[in-house]
Length: 617
View 1 (cartoon, rainbow, N blue to C red):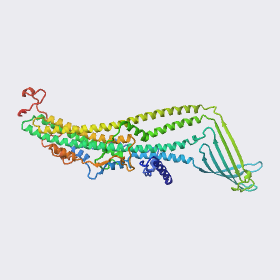
View 2 (cartoon, rainbow, N blue to C red; view 1 turned 45 degrees about the vertical axis):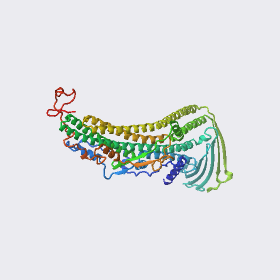
View 3 (cartoon, rainbow, N blue to C red; view 1 turned 180 degrees about the vertical axis):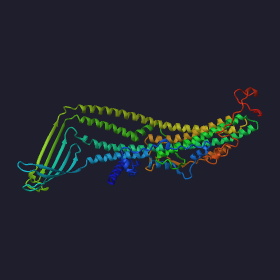
View 4 (cartoon, rainbow, N blue to C red; view 1 turned 120 degrees about the horizontal axis):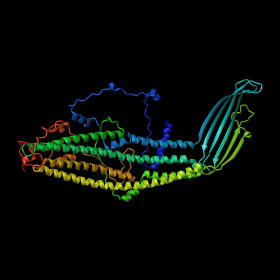
């Protein structure tokens, strides 16, 4: 197997050198150890583990358990978690991801098939040893039993334009097993040279069809694998950026939760002072509880997404990892939609495969036409025998005992109905392949043009969302300054809009990064190093820098005058409501119903309960 592995590695390395310097060859990995039980492998009825219900146990949980603490334990980052950067993630994707390993093995399988086909076109040696016992009964005598041993050593060679030649060395040895008159052991040999060459049907390059297609399939496999590497790079980077956007969403939710807590304290103070109605405090309390629930859901979604990401990378789910936010900043390309389409038509590897597969279909039509021709075969053979008078001739051939034969076979095409049907089928397949190529070309142009527009759209969306964040921050700041003149619900609405604009801004940042990578992939300009890193093009400035998660948070909180949270991920104590705030399980009871008109309040609005001072402007 080591010799086979070396041949495979040489084949794929040679193919990758033809493909380009940036193409990464697949790695031939040793098979994993077989840990299955030998006895169960051949059992017709393997054992099944399915116990009855009375053998199982279900332990009910305490209803008053601290669910929040358990959720915090789920989302808390372990101290021994492995920190993964973007480069670490990309490296792991090309070393342990199951999709990547499968793509590598498909490439290697194409190389194995080519090696098998090449071997069929090399001299092939065979040795057949036959032993037989025969008994004959001549008239008037007893049975004569003999042991015949025939060894045939032969070598075959296919001819490049059809037919084959074969050389055989036949050695016969006979041992009489019963007493007879004369020698009991006889040995003779014969050397046979044969050739069979077609002149019409199956003559020409059609004889090498299997080899030609295998060679081309290896080229297709090399292109497919390199194209997969590029697309897989973009997919992994996209999931990484999406996880960063989820982290930002959690941080934004934490900041909003802290702001709502402060608002609740202020509203309660106003209620105690008689300057605000109690229902306003309950509204803020309800919003606080909803914000806490949204934060828990966001964390759960992130944990699930991270686990799925680990599965795609081939990392065990139980392995503790933490993603370090890194920014892959690329300048927007200055390019038009028509130029992008031209680049895609020139460099896309999958498009080149589609073009070459049309040639395969044309070759199939030519081969099918060849099958309509009559069979005209020429055969010749030469046999050199040993001296028949020598009982132990060995391999001493006698030229005078040589035999020669030649023949010509002409088979008229009286029945070619199946071949004509096959020809029509290949012609239809050719037209289908042409239409497939046209459709693929049109879709490729659409993708390239859309990728250019997507960059501009993502850039404009990012600018708009940044302006929206700035406007909402100024609006919220003004509301805080004039909080005596604005009811808490208006403040909550501003908080919600600021949260939405921050989330949309972070998503716009993600979309812009992905749009640039998709543009490079769809125009055939993305180059990925064997290590999994992005290889910058001439004129491209690649900036891979860690993101300071707290810099923007601290600056924003400082501008708003609110204390910054101590960390990106709040502790359970930070999530606890302020003193006097009811728990989720114990909501505030509604105030007693009163006549809206009794207090002179507008219809449809709550009024302060007895003993509370009405709000004054």
